[in-house]
Image 1 (tube, rainbow, N blue to C red):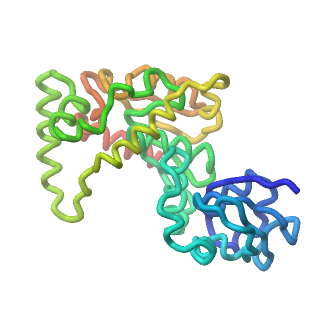
Image 2 (image 1 turned 180 degrees about the vertical axis):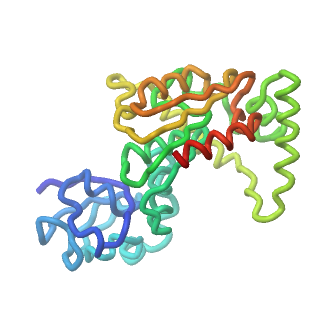
Length: 292
């Protein structure tokens, strides 16, 4: 009997998604943890049927257990079999982070969404659109690049740069010109205005996990280097700074070239924070694009 492994999440409810798991590709719509599936009682896993799951579930060995199809829409079956401690992490790669986005959209009953991705977020946005095109309307990609882009293994970056957060922002997000540095200082002041629900500080552990994810994304495939981009047919706006020192500008041109339905805006004298340096212009462009 054929088996396969996957790590996924559900979109919709079992009642509204009745003909799934006909093949490994369809299986990618279900659970957000890794598992093996075999012994379907029916040709398809539908509400009311059962399947046996086993192998390594959420990183732990488990005997094969029978699980009702309806439970695949949540983590209830994993918790029942293995306990909450079994799902501390579901992975840190770009695909894993895309699954979290899918899970968020699904739990919020969002069928299709406009997607904005900055830097690492832009990589996640590409993965989301390629794997689940039905969930995406339009995409804005800012300061990011394609899988296997140019100079995207980021060997020079280190989590220790968080020791000087202001220096990191000014040096990575803005250029050394006076207008850009002025924009950087204004950006730092705007950060102080967010009194309610401020973002938690980025820990070095989180930074290392992010670096591992983007370095894996940056490895150049041996074949079909930009094949994934050809699968993304959504209207896409690529926004980049002409002097981005984090994701070098050639990657914006690669996105615009290989995405079938893309347009490009390149802001002059701007680095990784181009969206902030040209905030008013960027917001107007984004508004027009998403309303298009």
